[in-house]
Structure formats: structure tokens, C-alpha cells
Length: 512
Image 1 (cartoon, rainbow, N blue to C red):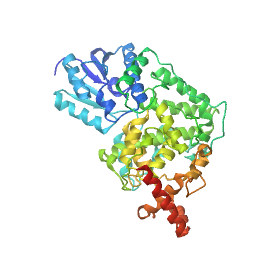
Image 2 (tube, one colour):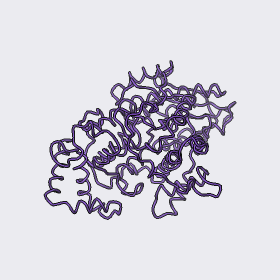
Image 3 (cartoon, helix red, strand yellow):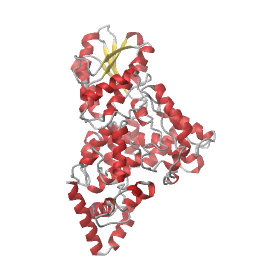
Image 4 (tube, rainbow, N blue to C red):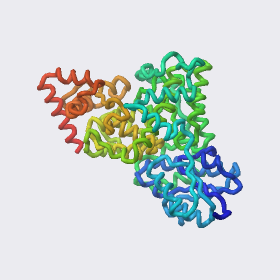
């Protein structure tokens, strides 16, 4: 042991001064190491705006830490000496600073966790990996919860998190309003054009961000996405401005319209806060308390407050628990045995299916789509078409600014593609064009007819939906939540069923 400083690597999704490794450190004898490394920009081909957001947020966070009195050693991506990997950059930092020990907050992904766990042996230094306590539920707590159940379901986990936090609970320990979940009140179709529809704050890139945008445009020109619409918050203060905009202007109607979709309206009443929460710029529990406060002050209805809080302490915490509980091989699961390649229009948005063109187009422009566009448009299509779930997972990880593997993988592989065989969700989220027509105005502008199952103008989702059920009947026929559609399929005349399956086969052939 030397009397050198402590070296504290801070990763790109740990952008808070309250991260565990910093909270347990002595500023006077610590060096914070922040690294922009090529490996992290290219292990999948991330959207240009996603890379720019993370790099700019990291650079601004380094300045914030310096202002708070920390010594920060920052390695930029274009530093000629940059080795390109976390481990090699830690080795170079050790040579510069001769630390006595390394303290780091646990990584959010299996891939990076393996690197951190290798450092002590590799460098011959004590390495303390601190638990990431930004989350409500620790790995051990989730494993204990899961071990006590024959079947894992988010709803029951969510209720435990409500009890743990006290969010939207009465003094008697009951859920506010008498119900745990108001999802049935969160499914209204879009109300039509609303001139008062809220818009997220669009932040003007400062000099730091402009430098990053130029770097990304030069180095990642062949990656998906546009930088023309870059508007992300890149500091805690900016993220808080967007939080206030959401609470003041969008949250009151979020509950009613969180599943709705409108042509050329990518944001609607959504918060646009997930990139900032997942990167560390915002505190998720503090946000939930702010949402609850608006409800208790009579400023937002219960279905809005509960629906938002459920997404944070329910789904977000639950999918993280599943990710770590199931292990790194979860990514390879393929319960439905699907192998079709992801169609090329997922990278261009060039398709006659208006709903797909809208969801993919705004993804290319903004590195953003809301949860129903991901689940019931692009995810639903991939499920119905029998796309290889690993390719779907990689695409989602690449294109969304809020996508880190711990949160994206279970949502995509489990909930969207049913590739885990029902571990995460009790049924596949498969739907025909009728659902899209009910929850959006997309079908009004589509060259396909949502009411037709067969024929040149038939909506592809319709034949694909029934074909999906037919080809997976051995695996899914016993699922009670699919009993009604399977009964309807069985009632169809044989010639009609044959025509539907032929329609689907011809469409799928056109994808190839």
C-alpha cells in the first residue's frame, strides 16, 4: 500500500456528485477519472445524438465536479494518447497518479462489470466496487423477492416498492384511491390536434456541446441518426428545467394520453426525462416525490401521478432486477425460435407503413420514441414478422438515447419480443392494425387499409397478426390471455385462414 491518492473512475451513466464511490471518498486525497473511450461508442453502432448527449453530459459533469472541489482527470475521445478502453485508460491513470487504491461504483451492465472485477488482479491494487444505491431495490433484495415466488410479475413487485417508499400510500398503509394500478385509465386515444400541446425544452448547444457535435459528426458519420435536431439537456440544471416543464405542462394529461400517438408529434404529454434519469442527471426518487406532491396539491389527477410513478419504481426497477437476476446469457434467449433479419427500413424509415415510418423517422431525428411506439409499433412488427430477437435488441440499444443494456434488454427481449418465453410478461404484446388505429391517427395517412386483411391494400399488421398466432399455436395456444384470439382464429373458415396466411407469407417474402 502506498500513500498515493484514491483513483475514482466515474462512468458515463454515473453523472451525479452523489454517486456512491464519490460519497464515500475524501476529496483531498482523490482523483476522479472520467474517460471517453472508443470501445463504448462502437460496441454497438450508437445513434449519433446518443453519443453526443453522453459525451457532452460527461464533459459538463466534469466541470461540475471541479466546481465542487474535486480533482478530475478527464480523457477526451480525440486525445491522441487515448487507448480506447476503460481498462487501458485506468492503467494509464495509475501510471500518472500512482494511487493507493481504486474506488468505483458498480457498472450497470454485465459487460462492464466484468472489466471492473478484473482490475484488482490486473493492477495489483485494492479495488472497492460500491453498490449503486441510486436504485430502490438492491440485487440481493430482488433475488430474495424472486426466490420467494413461483412466477415473477411486475405488479406485485411494484406494490412492494410503493410500500417501501410510501409513494401514493395513505396513512393506513393502503394505496391512494383504493387501487394499486390505474392503467385502465391510461389508454385514451389521441384527442386530435391541440395547439396547447406541451413541447419539451429545446436547449441551445453551448461551446462544449458544439465541440462534441463536430467530433461526433466527423467520427461517426456512418452511424444511424441525425444531429440536426439535437436539443438534449446536458447538465443537471438543464435537466431540472425539463423536469419542471413536464410537471407544470404535461403531467396533468399524461395519465390519459400516455399510450396515444399522433402523426408528426413525437413527444405529446411524455416527460422526455428518461435519458437524464438513466445518465444520472436526475434523481428518480426525488422526481417521483415531486410528482406525488403535485397530486396531493390537487394539480394532477391520480391516474397521471400513479401512471408515471409506476414507470419509475415499477417497470424501471423491475427490469433492472430481471437483468441482473437472469444473468448475461439472457440476451441469447429466443423462445419463439425466430431468425428473420431485421428489415433495412429500420435504419431508414423508408416504408409505406405510415406507423412504422413515423416511429422510425422520429427515432432517426431525435433518438427518441415513447414506450407505446417502441412496444406496439416497431416492437410489435418485429414480433409478428418473426425477427431475430437479438437483432431487435441491438437495434433498440443503438438508437435510443436512454438505452443502456440493463433497462433496454429485458424490455426488448422479454416484454416486446417474448423471447424469454413469458418470464417478464404473461403474454406476447401482439396486435393487429386495429390497435394502432384505435390509439393513433397513423392509419388515416397510410397507403394501406387498416380494415382489410388480404389484398394489395391490406394493412400488413392484420395478416401478420393472425399468422403469428397460427405459426406459434403449439407454444402459445395454452396461454389463457390469448384464449379469445385463438377461438376467433378457429372460427374462421378454412379458405379465409389460408388466404390470410398466404398474404402474410407473400409480405414476409418481400422483406427478404
